[in-house]
Length: 341
Ligand SMILES: [Zn+2]
Image (spheres, rainbow, N blue to C red):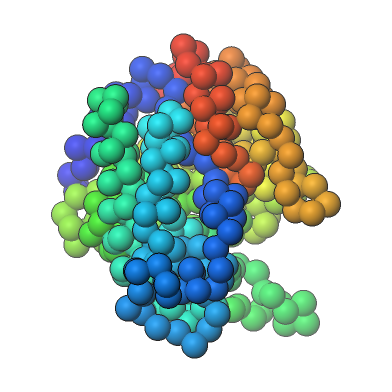
């Protein structure tokens, strides 16, 4: 049995005292920077990326860790100052599988290690100002492939990726995050539980190498009107599929706004004897794919989760900003966290 990182007991003590705050979306903040292809590639910024690809890089938001590190650090800092206790690395797509679209597979280790270091720097700046402890969550996304479903309707047995492909890719990512000093690993936006199981397996392989285990946060995504994940699971089934990982938190993020997420969150909170984490989108996207829900609207709904005793960690997903996180932190301040028995 591996030792737990001391960060787990620190987090668990805090989580019993109050509702902890997770940060919000990177995408909208990055969009506001109005970066060009040159900026993404690092040409003209002074931070020339030593990784090279023939592919255009505009839209490769994770690459900005290496090519626009100060801008990324400043976004993390704004979230920390808005009240986030836990801030995610900008590494949602930093696996060889997702980076293959950009020909940047070779950058994966640096993206993750630097991604964690940048968050640590931002959090240390914030802590120097107010003395509050803060935690770096190494963000692990679902990748753009799914292990349990075929992308080809005419060939249901076909798989674009295997469990082992995912296990190896996630292992590289998690090794980088750990090398950069991540305090915990957040496996998020899970639409295919088999992908998540490969990520969990990879985490335990890396923990066996380092000799200690980091806390895990596991967050699924309900994509179906009937309240299931893309791979067809209800929240209860999802919990039973990941319970073996003994996660610090299990929860839901993305796809839905807070109101639509509520019944699924309540179901999960009813079955999972661990801390519950919720970070919905800022409502549902409009016709242009943008999110219109203001900070107070999102915060009021999340305050409802807290009043019902459903949550231990709350934050925001797509469309949320530092203003949303500040409003959420204010709205749940003084409310009791969900009791975990
Ligand atoms: Zn989202």
